[in-house]
Length: 291
Image (tube, rainbow, N blue to C red; front, side):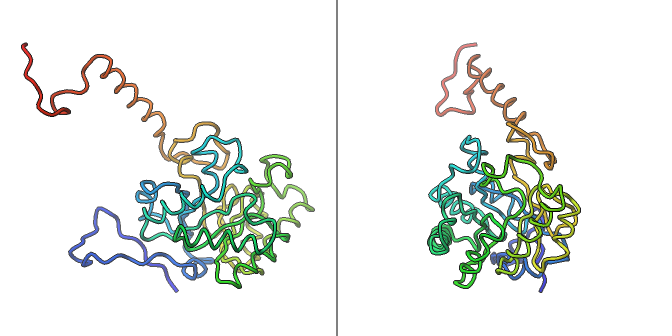
């Protein structure tokens, strides 16, 4: 099975397409990409951002990272199911083609498989997303299986798991020693065998990420892992220079929009204070003033 590649927006001709909407990338489409062309993933939390990214990515992740990026939290732990539902729905409204995956926030799935199902079902109903993502290795494998058997596609997440930062000793790379590497590998295998259609591999040593990608039968999506993973994901605000609080080592800046926004705001403020704005072109019924 192959994935239809998007046309460049500037070359799209509605007359030739008859105005038809292209189908979204599906979960089976992504699974078929294992070992093929790398899967492109970015985060999105709003309809405008989703609209801008949609033509260029295969997957939009509504990550609980929104807690830090949009809400100013110190971690992802305070994020609620209500937040994820609202932002997930916005991203689905703003996109047409990319597969949309919504994070399940801390406390919404760890208690039991039944709790996880209720939370995941709510997200899928209220947002229109195609899948959910949850963090955890072997301990969460029964929950992943429970959800998949009940028709909910699940993306796994192993390695550095931000929701567990309080028990994992901070944001450090995983898999440095043989014992820890073996544990991360076991987590990946368990989640894949439980039925996850893909696995985010975050913050692990490069050789371990390569070994995991070779070992599991589902696509791996790397973040701070290895170019050998089946795909890559980053936070959009990180690559655009819109999140300046800190820059993880694995982030590459592709723009510095934060400084451009500050410069634009500075110019606007100067115009307002000097009464240069609004000008004749910006108001209704402008009155001619004597020279």
